[in-house]
Image (tube, rainbow, N blue to C red; front, side, top):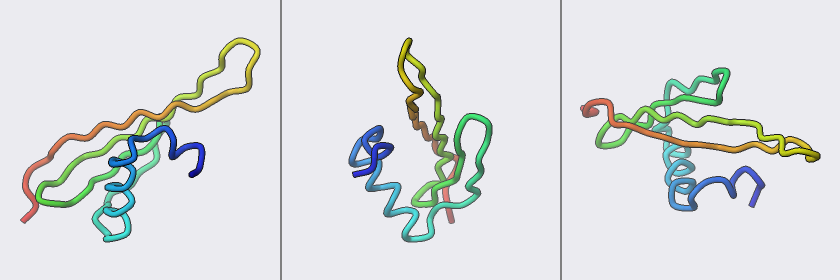
Length: 76
């Protein structure tokens, strides 16, 4: 498992991987804070992944990931 994968819940990570492999991810965009995308299923979900760099005193920077999603209407 890659270090960034450890930042996500295993179920959410697997669902995201499956959606990507089945071409259900669209409108993927990188922004200043991370990424946004739409995930298509029974409903369209807007997904945001925020990446923040943490720099504790005396340590090299580490990244913190935060993911959120919200439904955006029904896919027909």
